[in-house]
Image 1 (cartoon, rainbow, N blue to C red):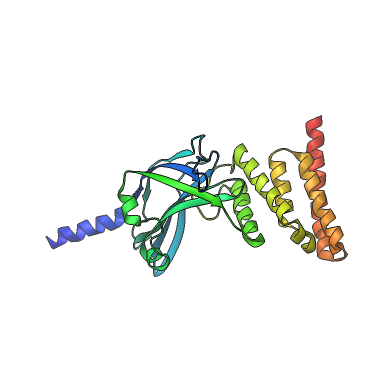
Image 2: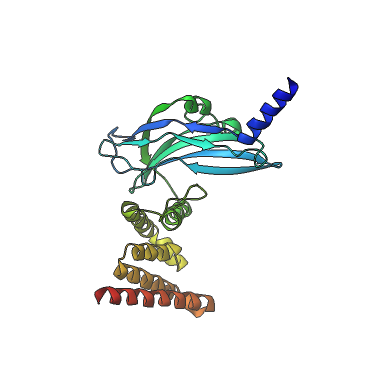
Length: 276
Protein backbone atom coordinates (compact mmCIF):
# COMPACT_ATOMS: atom_id res chain seq x y z
CA UNK A 1 0.00 0.00 0.00
CA UNK A 2 2.79 2.41 0.94
CA UNK A 3 4.59 1.55 -2.29
CA UNK A 4 1.47 2.34 -4.33
CA UNK A 5 1.02 5.69 -2.58
CA UNK A 6 4.71 6.49 -3.14
CA UNK A 7 4.45 5.72 -6.86
CA UNK A 8 1.30 7.83 -7.17
CA UNK A 9 3.05 10.82 -5.60
CA UNK A 10 6.00 10.42 -7.97
CA UNK A 11 3.66 10.35 -10.99
CA UNK A 12 1.93 13.51 -9.83
CA UNK A 13 5.26 15.30 -9.42
CA UNK A 14 6.47 14.20 -12.83
CA UNK A 15 3.23 15.06 -14.60
CA UNK A 16 2.80 18.44 -12.97
CA UNK A 17 -0.66 19.96 -13.21
CA UNK A 18 -2.40 22.75 -15.04
CA UNK A 19 -4.15 26.01 -14.26
CA UNK A 20 -7.32 26.85 -16.15
CA UNK A 21 -8.39 30.46 -16.50
CA UNK A 22 -12.05 31.32 -17.06
CA UNK A 23 -13.48 32.54 -20.33
CA UNK A 24 -13.78 36.29 -19.86
CA UNK A 25 -16.68 38.27 -21.29
CA UNK A 26 -15.96 41.90 -20.56
CA UNK A 27 -17.21 45.39 -21.24
CA UNK A 28 -15.27 48.66 -20.95
CA UNK A 29 -17.15 51.75 -19.78
CA UNK A 30 -16.10 55.36 -19.30
CA UNK A 31 -15.98 55.96 -15.55
CA UNK A 32 -17.65 59.38 -15.86
CA UNK A 33 -20.26 58.89 -18.59
CA UNK A 34 -20.81 55.14 -18.07
CA UNK A 35 -20.89 54.84 -21.86
CA UNK A 36 -19.19 51.95 -23.70
CA UNK A 37 -15.69 52.63 -24.98
CA UNK A 38 -14.80 51.46 -28.48
CA UNK A 39 -11.22 50.60 -29.49
CA UNK A 40 -9.84 50.14 -26.01
CA UNK A 41 -6.70 47.98 -26.09
CA UNK A 42 -7.18 44.92 -23.88
CA UNK A 43 -4.51 42.93 -22.08
CA UNK A 44 -4.78 40.05 -19.64
CA UNK A 45 -2.06 38.24 -17.73
CA UNK A 46 -1.45 35.58 -15.12
CA UNK A 47 1.45 36.15 -12.72
CA UNK A 48 3.18 33.05 -11.36
CA UNK A 49 6.03 32.15 -9.07
CA UNK A 50 7.78 28.78 -9.24
CA UNK A 51 10.21 27.43 -6.66
CA UNK A 52 13.34 26.20 -8.42
CA UNK A 53 16.07 24.98 -6.13
CA UNK A 54 15.42 27.51 -3.40
CA UNK A 55 14.90 30.44 -5.77
CA UNK A 56 11.49 31.81 -6.69
CA UNK A 57 11.23 32.42 -10.44
CA UNK A 58 8.54 34.95 -11.37
CA UNK A 59 6.83 35.01 -14.74
CA UNK A 60 3.90 36.72 -16.46
CA UNK A 61 1.86 34.89 -19.08
CA UNK A 62 -0.27 36.71 -21.63
CA UNK A 63 -3.82 35.36 -21.73
CA UNK A 64 -5.53 37.59 -24.27
CA UNK A 65 -5.60 36.79 -27.95
CA UNK A 66 -3.20 39.01 -29.94
CA UNK A 67 -4.69 42.37 -30.93
CA UNK A 68 -7.69 42.20 -28.58
CA UNK A 69 -9.70 45.42 -28.44
CA UNK A 70 -13.27 46.46 -27.73
CA UNK A 71 -16.08 46.66 -30.29
CA UNK A 72 -18.63 49.47 -30.69
CA UNK A 73 -20.47 48.24 -27.59
CA UNK A 74 -17.24 48.25 -25.58
CA UNK A 75 -17.22 44.46 -25.37
CA UNK A 76 -14.42 41.93 -25.66
CA UNK A 77 -13.84 38.20 -25.12
CA UNK A 78 -10.77 36.43 -23.76
CA UNK A 79 -10.91 32.63 -24.25
CA UNK A 80 -10.24 30.20 -21.43
CA UNK A 81 -6.68 28.89 -21.36
CA UNK A 82 -4.99 25.87 -19.78
CA UNK A 83 -1.47 26.53 -18.51
CA UNK A 84 0.78 23.65 -17.52
CA UNK A 85 2.78 24.14 -14.35
CA UNK A 86 6.47 23.17 -14.48
CA UNK A 87 6.88 19.58 -13.29
CA UNK A 88 9.52 18.04 -11.03
CA UNK A 89 12.54 18.36 -11.19
CA UNK A 90 12.20 21.73 -12.97
CA UNK A 91 9.78 23.11 -10.42
CA UNK A 92 9.07 22.41 -6.76
CA UNK A 93 5.68 24.07 -6.66
CA UNK A 94 4.00 26.84 -8.63
CA UNK A 95 1.80 29.50 -7.06
CA UNK A 96 -0.51 31.85 -8.93
CA UNK A 97 0.07 35.34 -7.60
CA UNK A 98 -2.39 37.41 -9.60
CA UNK A 99 -4.80 37.42 -12.51
CA UNK A 100 -5.61 40.73 -14.16
CA UNK A 101 -7.39 42.28 -17.13
CA UNK A 102 -6.68 45.86 -18.20
CA UNK A 103 -7.89 48.34 -20.81
CA UNK A 104 -6.29 51.51 -22.20
CA UNK A 105 -7.08 54.07 -24.88
CA UNK A 106 -5.01 56.33 -27.09
CA UNK A 107 -6.27 59.41 -25.21
CA UNK A 108 -4.59 58.24 -21.99
CA UNK A 109 -7.52 56.60 -20.25
CA UNK A 110 -7.10 53.29 -18.52
CA UNK A 111 -8.31 50.90 -15.88
CA UNK A 112 -8.61 47.24 -15.01
CA UNK A 113 -9.50 44.54 -12.54
CA UNK A 114 -7.04 42.35 -10.69
CA UNK A 115 -7.37 39.33 -8.45
CA UNK A 116 -4.64 38.63 -5.91
CA UNK A 117 -3.41 35.48 -4.18
CA UNK A 118 -0.48 34.33 -2.04
CA UNK A 119 1.76 37.05 -0.64
CA UNK A 120 0.29 39.52 -3.17
CA UNK A 121 -2.97 39.30 -1.24
CA UNK A 122 -1.21 39.76 2.07
CA UNK A 123 0.90 42.70 0.92
CA UNK A 124 -1.44 44.54 -1.40
CA UNK A 125 -4.92 43.61 -0.23
CA UNK A 126 -7.68 41.78 -2.05
CA UNK A 127 -7.83 44.00 -5.14
CA UNK A 128 -11.03 43.21 -7.01
CA UNK A 129 -11.60 39.82 -5.44
CA UNK A 130 -10.10 36.57 -4.28
CA UNK A 131 -7.95 34.85 -6.86
CA UNK A 132 -9.22 31.41 -5.88
CA UNK A 133 -12.81 32.48 -6.60
CA UNK A 134 -12.18 33.73 -10.15
CA UNK A 135 -10.09 30.69 -11.11
CA UNK A 136 -12.89 28.33 -10.05
CA UNK A 137 -15.23 29.79 -12.66
CA UNK A 138 -15.61 28.46 -16.19
CA UNK A 139 -16.91 31.83 -17.37
CA UNK A 140 -16.67 35.30 -15.83
CA UNK A 141 -18.33 38.60 -16.70
CA UNK A 142 -16.19 41.67 -16.00
CA UNK A 143 -16.86 45.39 -16.20
CA UNK A 144 -13.84 47.67 -16.51
CA UNK A 145 -14.24 51.39 -15.82
CA UNK A 146 -11.56 53.59 -17.35
CA UNK A 147 -10.58 57.15 -16.53
CA UNK A 148 -7.75 59.54 -17.32
CA UNK A 149 -4.40 58.11 -16.23
CA UNK A 150 -2.09 60.59 -14.52
CA UNK A 151 1.59 60.12 -15.38
CA UNK A 152 4.64 62.30 -14.96
CA UNK A 153 7.23 62.53 -17.75
CA UNK A 154 9.27 59.59 -16.50
CA UNK A 155 6.20 57.37 -16.06
CA UNK A 156 4.88 58.30 -19.50
CA UNK A 157 8.23 57.50 -21.11
CA UNK A 158 8.31 54.11 -19.34
CA UNK A 159 4.83 53.50 -20.76
CA UNK A 160 6.11 54.39 -24.25
CA UNK A 161 9.01 51.98 -23.86
CA UNK A 162 6.58 49.16 -23.12
CA UNK A 163 4.50 49.96 -26.21
CA UNK A 164 7.57 50.35 -28.44
CA UNK A 165 9.05 47.05 -27.23
CA UNK A 166 5.77 45.33 -28.05
CA UNK A 167 5.80 46.63 -31.62
CA UNK A 168 9.41 45.51 -32.12
CA UNK A 169 9.52 42.24 -30.16
CA UNK A 170 5.89 41.21 -29.62
CA UNK A 171 6.30 41.51 -25.84
CA UNK A 172 5.42 44.35 -23.47
CA UNK A 173 7.98 43.10 -20.94
CA UNK A 174 8.53 39.44 -20.06
CA UNK A 175 5.15 38.06 -21.11
CA UNK A 176 5.11 34.86 -23.11
CA UNK A 177 4.40 33.79 -25.73
CA UNK A 178 5.47 36.70 -27.89
CA UNK A 179 3.07 38.02 -30.53
CA UNK A 180 4.56 37.16 -33.90
CA UNK A 181 5.69 40.23 -35.88
CA UNK A 182 4.67 42.56 -33.08
CA UNK A 183 1.90 45.11 -33.46
CA UNK A 184 -0.65 45.14 -36.26
CA UNK A 185 -1.60 48.27 -38.26
CA UNK A 186 -4.13 49.50 -35.68
CA UNK A 187 -1.69 49.07 -32.81
CA UNK A 188 1.13 50.71 -34.76
CA UNK A 189 -1.04 53.77 -35.29
CA UNK A 190 -1.93 53.71 -31.58
CA UNK A 191 1.74 53.60 -30.51
CA UNK A 192 2.70 56.37 -32.96
CA UNK A 193 -0.04 58.62 -31.56
CA UNK A 194 1.12 57.89 -28.00
CA UNK A 195 4.67 58.97 -28.89
CA UNK A 196 3.37 62.15 -30.51
CA UNK A 197 1.29 62.96 -27.41
CA UNK A 198 4.34 62.49 -25.20
CA UNK A 199 6.58 64.69 -27.38
CA UNK A 200 3.96 67.45 -27.48
CA UNK A 201 3.13 67.30 -23.78
CA UNK A 202 6.73 67.36 -22.56
CA UNK A 203 8.31 69.50 -25.30
CA UNK A 204 9.73 72.01 -22.78
CA UNK A 205 11.48 69.28 -20.80
CA UNK A 206 12.88 67.68 -23.96
CA UNK A 207 14.23 70.99 -25.28
CA UNK A 208 16.09 71.57 -22.02
CA UNK A 209 17.45 68.04 -22.17
CA UNK A 210 18.46 68.40 -25.81
CA UNK A 211 17.67 64.85 -26.78
CA UNK A 212 14.83 62.34 -26.57
CA UNK A 213 14.91 58.61 -27.23
CA UNK A 214 11.21 58.94 -27.99
CA UNK A 215 12.08 60.88 -31.17
CA UNK A 216 14.26 58.06 -32.47
CA UNK A 217 11.62 55.51 -31.51
CA UNK A 218 8.96 57.53 -33.34
CA UNK A 219 11.14 57.60 -36.45
CA UNK A 220 11.53 53.80 -36.20
CA UNK A 221 7.77 53.42 -35.94
CA UNK A 222 7.15 55.61 -38.99
CA UNK A 223 9.70 53.54 -40.92
CA UNK A 224 7.84 50.40 -39.83
CA UNK A 225 4.70 52.06 -41.20
CA UNK A 226 6.58 52.70 -44.49
CA UNK A 227 6.19 56.46 -44.03
CA UNK A 228 9.79 57.27 -44.92
CA UNK A 229 9.16 61.01 -45.26
CA UNK A 230 7.96 61.31 -41.68
CA UNK A 231 10.76 59.08 -40.40
CA UNK A 232 13.37 61.32 -42.06
CA UNK A 233 11.68 64.45 -40.69
CA UNK A 234 11.64 63.04 -37.14
CA UNK A 235 15.31 62.03 -37.31
CA UNK A 236 16.19 65.51 -38.58
CA UNK A 237 14.23 67.00 -35.68
CA UNK A 238 16.37 64.92 -33.32
CA UNK A 239 19.55 66.42 -34.83
CA UNK A 240 18.11 69.94 -34.67
CA UNK A 241 17.30 69.45 -30.99
CA UNK A 242 20.90 68.46 -30.25
CA UNK A 243 22.17 71.50 -32.17
CA UNK A 244 19.83 73.85 -30.34
CA UNK A 245 21.02 72.59 -26.97
CA UNK A 246 24.68 72.84 -28.00
CA UNK A 247 25.40 69.14 -27.51
CA UNK A 248 27.27 68.66 -30.77
CA UNK A 249 30.47 70.14 -29.36
CA UNK A 250 30.89 66.85 -27.48
CA UNK A 251 32.31 63.80 -29.25
CA UNK A 252 29.69 61.40 -27.94
CA UNK A 253 26.89 63.50 -29.44
CA UNK A 254 28.80 63.89 -32.71
CA UNK A 255 28.83 60.09 -32.95
CA UNK A 256 25.13 60.03 -32.15
CA UNK A 257 24.50 62.56 -34.92
CA UNK A 258 26.55 60.48 -37.38
CA UNK A 259 24.47 57.41 -36.54
CA UNK A 260 21.23 59.29 -37.14
CA UNK A 261 22.53 60.69 -40.45
CA UNK A 262 23.34 57.13 -41.53
CA UNK A 263 19.73 56.14 -40.77
CA UNK A 264 18.50 59.12 -42.78
CA UNK A 265 20.62 58.06 -45.78
CA UNK A 266 19.18 54.55 -45.59
CA UNK A 267 15.64 55.93 -45.48
CA UNK A 268 16.33 58.18 -48.46
CA UNK A 269 17.50 55.11 -50.40
CA UNK A 270 14.31 53.25 -49.47
CA UNK A 271 12.23 56.23 -50.55
CA UNK A 272 14.10 56.38 -53.88
CA UNK A 273 13.65 52.64 -54.48
CA UNK A 274 9.92 52.93 -53.90
CA UNK A 275 9.64 55.87 -56.28
CA UNK A 276 11.45 53.88 -58.98
